[in-house]
Length: 363
Image 1 (tube, rainbow, N blue to C red):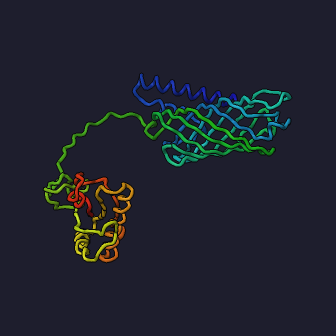
Image 2 (cartoon, helix red, strand yellow; image 1 turned 90 degrees about the horizontal axis):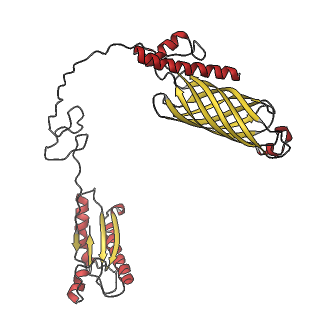
Image 3 (tube, one colour; image 1 turned 120 degrees about the vertical axis):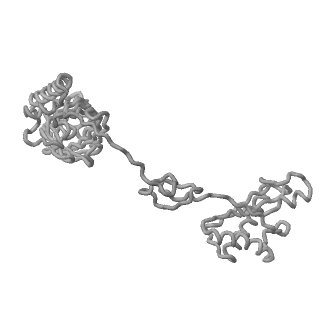
């Protein structure tokens, strides 16, 4: 079986070299000649949508813990080594591969005989997309030398294309003994070369035909820069900005109102006589259902910073409650915040400045 793998790899590398020579000498795809000579895996199964590939990888294996103390398993304690694969996808999703690998294992006991293990087997593969980015696989392997001589395996892989032919891949795989009870885990990383990537690889080249295309500008009756065929809002006035669908972009603006509300000294109690001031905010919000408001409380500088911050917050919350409870404004549209003395309008230390700084703002 090892001879068969090496022989097939030799054939495919030979084909790749022949393809390059034919491209240089005859200007045609070598894959056409390869198909005619039948140098493919499983002749008769390969169609124009299949992909034949070879690959090389390096694998690390974590062995089942019971192997470390069992003479029947030669005290295996993890291993690593190279491998080769030869595969074909029969459809854009389904494929199979022949895989050979060699593992150089560590031994957990001086009683171990040592030596490498070699695996040879087949996998059935299913990839989730035609781009081959992710796939699952399952199969079996013959192990020599080894206890049980065969394992079943299943795993998950992913591929990262580098060019139309070359790609990197990584896989995680579990190996289950078919005659003995053990489970090993492996991780692979490697590179693949794709021989046939699309149906065009099998077609003879043809002389390109020049086509002269005369383009006619499509109409844009409302002159907003979006052609009528794609315009979801025809007839938009020229003075308005539009988005890619030809619809008016909503303008965003901020309106600030300073409310004439006086609170008792050191208090957040709100007199009903100030409700008309708050109603101005409610009326504005009713006329613009898409707006939201922040009620900001501000104090003058006397007293401590923390005290002023708490007092301004309480006064802002009092105004917000009136908006929601008395004027039925949606609470989701109302926010209150205390700023304390952080935004003084007049930094002077006199009664006129203090009076100006004590305020409620609706933004």
